[in-house]
Length: 455
Ligand SMILES: *Cc1c(COP(=O)(O)O)cnc(C)c1O
Image 1 (cartoon, rainbow, N blue to C red):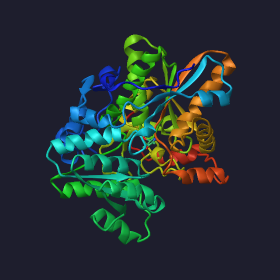
Image 2: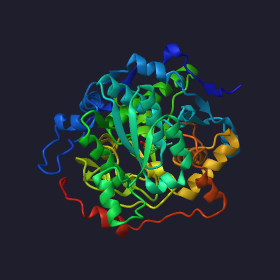
Image 3: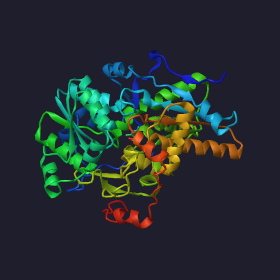
Image 4: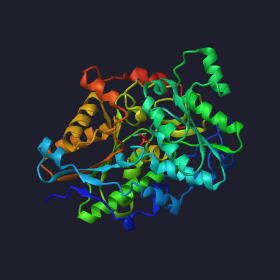
């Protein structure tokens, strides 16, 4: 009988997160203060972020201990299963040597990988004696994970949710409310930034840029509050390495090892989470696993963006970040995979890509949703629209192996389920989902305005 599901006992769960910075051939360039163009100081970061998270952001230590309390909460849903996708393999007609596994992060209480970072972020905030956190959310996945985590550590959480998404996704908002968070449609009348946006246009549907401005303004006006982020930053990807560390041990249990590791790519946290432990094995033990980031064709920062300093938000309030970017005022089409609609990649992922240590592919949305439907019909789980990009990339790798007549072990990260995002499937099933072509001229419009600090 083929192995179907591999789960580690509690006693075998990883007790440390892995920091890829320790093993990078070239360390990432520093973030810069937009005014002085000097590297940003820890002091400035500490006023906005939780101190221990800032320390982790700047850390070059290889291993960071996972606090006992965080391990306790992880155990509610971890170890997440590594599953051999035998039913999908059958539907694809794969030969015995071509294997597909998936790591099922959809089993977390919030339905995605995001609680892996939300829980430690709330833990460190409470440890610092803080009482209030603010954050923003686009699609709502980060907002819901953070709402759960904040409640577990007795923190008040205020979530600024992009207004269009607040109106489109009432169930996401209700999840956040159930966990006790206050959710505001952004632009809101609770901040100067929100009021200014509303004065300019009372029907403003909001943007991630405005929501970030509101969340950061709240923090600057409240000494006991801090702001938190669900992707892009190195400390977030580091927390997510719990995924890949488990996968390494799970493969060891069945005596297999992946030739290809795949994750979808928004800000890079679930991709880094599954891929960086395998990249360490490549860098330190001469393994040759290929690591593939799957991004949407309509938001192709890795495959068509420029490596340059850029702001993390639309409004230009964050430090300048060295990254592959489409330009901070690039406006991605509404592609129904909200978590992948971000203009830039994190600094660590960007440097690794620049050094050729992983590959990036772009995936069209119709093909990705079709792969999602095939996955639902075979393995049963309805995947998050974001995750369907990884599924499509895995299928392409399996088909290539069949054509070449070679054996291949493929694993992809199922970053979440799609039960709250069924409208994407509605569009696909009704035939109204279309692929979006992006011309070079369109991309140049927003990348050409970047100040060329990297030559
Ligand atoms: C947020 C999210 C993503 C994209 O974010 P990363 O930081 O790149 O991982 C992907 N999948 C799901 C289900 C998400 O919630």
